[in-house]
Length: 499
Image (cartoon, rainbow, N blue to C red; front, side, top):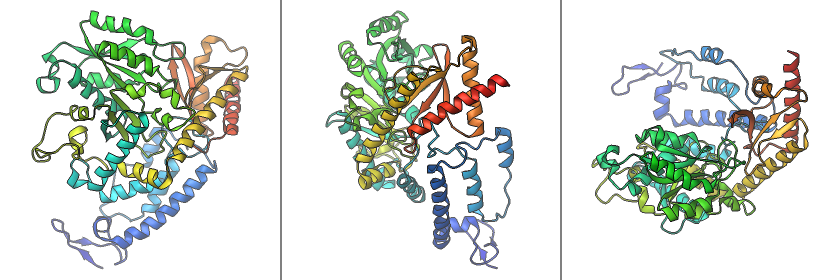
């Protein structure tokens, strides 16, 4: 029996044998144990990945929340058993399987295995990204991927930005910069009450994080002035003057327009060029929430969806969506790079020196101890090239178009709108079903499919009706899987009718 005498800790047993150290000691000092655990873990994950890609088992092995919570009790032994593999096997068994061809749910990527390995490296290095000294390699890679993204979007040589943790943080960061640039007073230094109440214009279909951001900034519920949408749930550019006038009548100083590329619910793209022209003519900041759809610029056949984005003052782009990165990694890119320093204006002398500018990432983001999120994106672009990403965008967008055509051809299904991205909304309308019963039917069908594990799809409410919603994220999903989805929906609806 060997003892560990870590500084500041009582001597404790180093496991049952010299080859089995305690978790605390092993995590900080035992490279060979890490090597052995790592080899076993990679084998475990590879087997799990192969089963998912092959479509084995349930997409989501459903268990009621209370049941699963009981299986993971909040009690921990003083001396553990060291069985990390056994615990992780339970995690894999109970988790949603995004690589499964019948995962057609939320806008969350089936991550590239190479990117997942990069996350392991980032976790072990644990280089926080607030200052260059703490994350030198990560900072250099962050500068590179932001430059690449800005160039693809056509934002110009002066563009600059930052990576942050998710689209919600990204929208907030962009709108903080817009406030500082457009408010007409120093809202950061003097507070939100140092001038008139502010507002932005956004379509009714905009992501909820836009409203959340303006309320975090203290603008209240009136901080977002809604802009009407057309029959395809896109911002109606001709409605912008009326929305601007409504904001002014309410005593608001409108500083920006937020466009969606695409909207989260319907997956359709706002008319960016027309919105850009309106913003230019009225002196407003033009922000594009392209968290999901910015990657369309990589596809020759689909980049036209983003026509006009090159005029944006700020853009957000989630790499953890169509670029297949593990969550989270969001780029916030400013056409005038200096604006990226205006979102967060204070300087902490113990972190940031007087000459800290572009290299000190923490000056421009919410996070201080930020993950080395640039590693996975830089590494996959550098080692795989850009073509696989372009192919993934084109493949999933085309798959959605074909699925839309299949729905239109089916007499018992209704398509919300022709797909513009990889998001498709539709309803099952069996013959003889009363209109007033359709919402409950969509909910019941989805619930049944999810709980039996045959498919994972979601639902949304648009203009007073419930729609089934699919986002085709997995590269393993094929046309035959979507045909099977329609069959499964019909079967679930028939079961519901009999029950």
